[in-house]
Amino acid sequence: MTEWTIEGTILTGTEFEPVEGRLVIEDNRITSIEETTVSSSTIVAPAFINAHTHIGDSIAKEAGLELSLEALVAPPDGLKHRLLAEAEPSTLVGAMRRSLRFMELEGIGACYDFREGGIEGVERLREAADGLTIDANAFGRGDAGVIAYADGYGASGAADERFASQRLAARGADKPFGIHAGEVDSGDINPALDLDPDFLVHMVHAEEIHLERVEDAQIPVVCCPRSNLVTDVGLPPVEALAARTSVALGTDNVMINNPSMLREMEFTSKLFDVTPKEVLAMATTNAASMLDRPDGYLAAGRPARMVLIDGDSDNLSGYVDPVSAIVRRACRTDIEEVILSPIEPED
Ligand SMILES: [Zn+2]
Image (cartoon, rainbow, N blue to C red; front, side):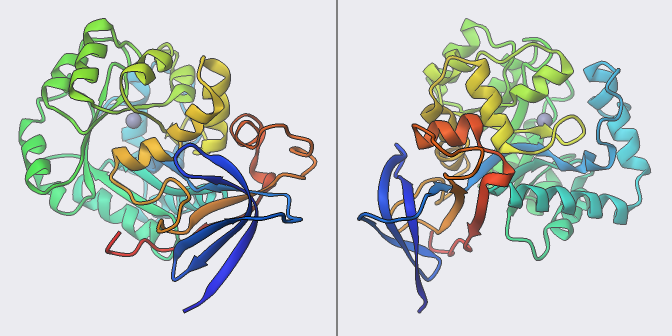
């Protein structure tokens, strides 16, 4: 048994209550958080969870910025899908691996990728993640058969096909089913909700009827504000969604944004009328409960998965509130260490 400790200002529990003191880790788990005076200026936060990515398009960063959303990413003929089809498998795997490594260094402990390319696409993500500590989850596409290989099903959108068999198969396999909805307009939101998904992605064009349905069924929503800015589809009603259901954050296509949750949190905090604490929850606890994860917050018994941030860096020195400092200001150079202990099977 190896026991070790981390000292600093620890953001504890689901409310991120700052506690000055010591966090004790034993066998990949937090065993206690002890309040005491320490000299460390480190801020200890839960590792972030990127709840929606497409890292396959790491091969085409900033490509097609002049194109409409449809011409850029709509299957099967959008630029992204043509580039994915043309790419050598080794090039694709290598590019995805670099995005995963980038996410690890940015304090991200898990990502949920809507992986294109069916079973083969899922296997390529596994290959890209081999040996890394980030928990890279592949949500498969294509027919229902992909679900046996994937961590869940990631549907492109209810305007593309019905997805009834995939929905059923995901439920049968006890794996999550997520679907894009309301990105360009509201037309695909009701059919997506009819599938009773485990979560929705985007919801930029959610109207009152959709908000009511989301609230009634308590379906979480992953918002991707930076992606929506780039593709010019409008901005999601984050405040209204957060008032009705649980909201998580994702960085969406690597093609159009780097997969940094620090940046996504900063944009979200500055674009919408939500508190820094609510935004940190979107990047940690909300995503963890949506995706049935045991991490996402720091407490005794939880897996030791956290990011250590230098509260006395040139960037953060003199901060007033540690949560605001992380959500609104911190950047990669402030990160001292990322600890991603493996999640034990019994968690
Ligand atoms: Zn997406």
